Image (cartoon, rainbow, N blue to C red):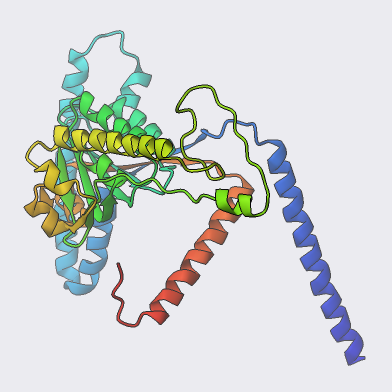
Length: 371
């Protein structure tokens, strides 16, 4: 009897697993059929960070302070907030009276994002975590477009940037997106807590003010081209490789073609030309740097980069944001694309692999010295 019960439980587990696999496969297949739908659709989220930091503060005060003192302080703060709200409402009402009568109520609501009074400075917080293809630029461009619809010259945009760099054209587009903010005469600050190297620094240097943590990795102003070549292996196995082009330099170095001095020289010229463009961009935005000394491909840590005028201030983004909350309404703007199931599964798998690799490296490197 016990054997039959155990067998039934085993069979139930197997059936459950099979059903789950079938559901996943069917869902993936359905998602594949709809792959031509517009992938740019997503959700724009706006969060008031002042409330977040205030909540953190109150959680600590509630435990650290005497109960009666905590209530007294909270009561005084609410009184001040009400008074400030009334003043802002009067200022907003006066501003509305001075505007054109044909401005619709819908336009008014769009200009006062999440109900924040327009009489107070706003800081819009964006985030960019870059990979080799700078895929995050897809969301960044939407976030910037949203901010530019209501931001004023007295407001400010803060970008929290983390990127080791990648493809030239991808990071060139990302830097151009940041330039849109400056073209609208809105101050742009970039905060780097961990790394802004190569294409990451190409983006960061566009800022009016560049802030970095003490040990943030900054620089790597250089260009690299690398490619394996299998031509000799093909010859050793009597495999012919032929490529037909129109245009002298349509193809220079390829993975299977024979390497020629002419092709190598052309690629080297291209790399040097891109490097010159990179140096010019940095110099245009940060004229105080000695571009020939910093454009060697080297990296520096935050304090070292400040000595070379590559950054303006040593501070973490958390410290910067907490200071900003004292004088401005700080709004975090996030555009999130709708992800299909295969993408979600891929992200979950990649996250699990990253955690496993990080855990292995930590165990195999007890001193935690890494470069």
